[in-house]
Length: 350
Image (cartoon, rainbow, N blue to C red; front, side, top):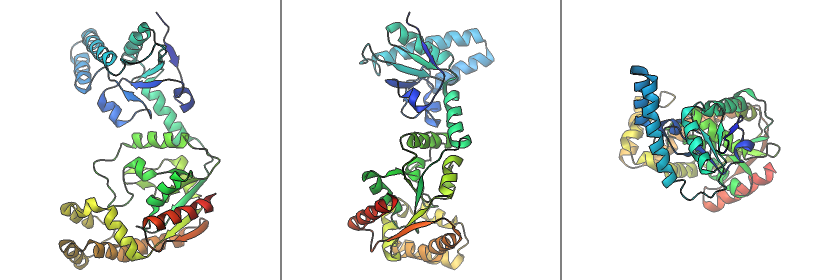
């Protein structure tokens, strides 16, 4: 029987040496977090894992292992007939489960008997998670970060995307966190778990050259409910800024387009207005709700910009001691204007 290779580290260079990284944990475990780029071929689904665990606790370890082995064999056979059916004899997979135990060992044994040069990650997901913690919480990494700053609605995300298209290194924290970075910023369903956010962030960092500038949108220490880990946050606190500016009326129009999902959901809009981080007062709330009732969302956005977002941004900018590389002023937020702004920011960063 071919030997099963045991891998001790979960760093990017080690993982990149395999044709596939296969997570054999249940779909629920995989959804919470997984190695970036891994595929989920569970040997026990959510219900089967719960069933085996219940038997282990309430009946016997022997019966749990016997029932589990039968389920695993059936599920691995399914994967061999589907997801793995077209793999060549030279296929080199890396297998991992929660702790590198029965589930990954069973899958690896079968794949190695077929003739594939199969490896398992010692310690499984827990080894990988320790690697993430060390990199993002315990390591000092010199990151050449430049912040893209500006008041709400100034097109920062649009410019960041255009910078990436121009070959400038960027990290889109809002995309990784699935949140637009404000009280109105939730995108669709729930955000990824903190662990998943960190996995995405580490994968993004691993794909960049830390010696070259990395443009990151200026954020607070949290994007929605997801905390920016210390390694990156420390770099952001010391980073110089490029500031975008645009007229309030252009920003109001831009916000209505960007947050169309919220203006289309009146109940959600009302709920968000009542959870603003300051107390606007009963009369202000009534006025804003009347604007919403009338479909005057641009006027509503302008009012929020004037009474909250711009004053808050101005206070923060006055207190911010970080260097400014320059200010880019946009006459409007048209495609041409955003393209021109990206070109100017790219020149400043480089």
